[in-house]
Image (cartoon, rainbow, N blue to C red; front, side, top):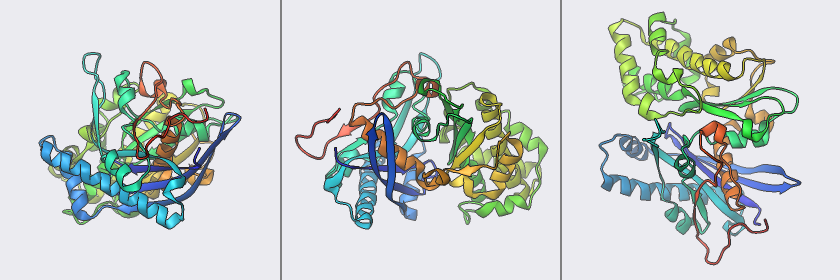
Amino acid sequence: MKPFAIGLMSGTSADGIDAALMKISEKDNKLSLDLEHAIFEPYSEGERSRIFNAFSPDFSVYEMGRLNRDMGSWFARAVVHLLEESGVSADDVLVIGSHGQTIAHYPPQHTDDPGFCVQIGEPAVIAAITGIDVVSQFRSADMAMGGQGAPLIPYFDYALLTSAVENRVALNIGGIANVTILAKGTRSEDVIGFDTGPGNMVLDGLAGLVSDGRMHYDKDGSMAREGRVHADLLEGWLNHPYFALIPPKSTGREQFGIPYCQDMFSEARRKGVSHADLLRTATEFVAETIFRGIQSQMPEPFALIASGGGTRNPALMDALERRLNLTRRWESTTQYGIPSDYKEAMAFALFAWQFCRGVKTNLPRATGARTSVMQGSWTPARPGRELYPER
């Protein structure tokens, strides 16, 4: 097999594309993953505006089609730049794993409503521009089996972070916060993972509202640190029905996006809450929901291994650390050879590589699917290539 795979990720914050070039191999059923190179390609203001417009249910089919096509070219652009910087030839890359951009995620509510997910970034365009086969639409097969289609990262966490001697929790704080519960010596079929609720999504949304759009986020949680917690606001937010759900569960912008942030902001104004107090309360809200989610599944002392943009917010991480029953101070995935900002892109490189080998990569206890399945749809760029070589 060709030695390299590329992973592409555009998250709920829609600020740009993470691209990771991975060297992956397996010997004696043990995976070896090495990150050769990674880049972040920020969206222009115009590109980002188009993506955010697509989050509206009223976005036209015509505009969605155009955006799907154009995002394919943006993802391909990131691949081209990644290969240029790394000096690796496209001929040496087995596959690209593209998460795409999630536009809508409606997980199943009951057996009569299996839910759906819409992810764009046309894989045929990526394949045509790069000349590399693409695996995309990673959530669809899991949802077809009754699963949430999320979170998918627990497979990656299990493969790289499970310990035989200590309990661990892998936490990623992106727009949404999700956790993987890794009890010591756990088996893959016993791994639990779920979205705890909003992460940076509400903090960034509120930062934009209090600054009339001048701030995309509260840098280092500096404004939040100046404020105090408003107990009534916090208590009311914690009554959201999502937090009472038992895993498997997942969420997204549909529940905690801009309209939700606008409601939070309006309520704070009615109560006369200052901007600093609002951001402090929201920070404690995110920390509390993460804590409650973890505590419900891992009450024992554990090591916390964290990633995502939220880890760069000291106010948030301090609030979280005060609550958790840790064996030591939280650590970044970077300390385990997984750069925090590129963990999810690395994961989709692995998922695509495993797809080409015929390996199932969802964990039914995490997603709620009836069975483990192959995840992804293959878009070939090269004629005559076989899937599942050298199995």
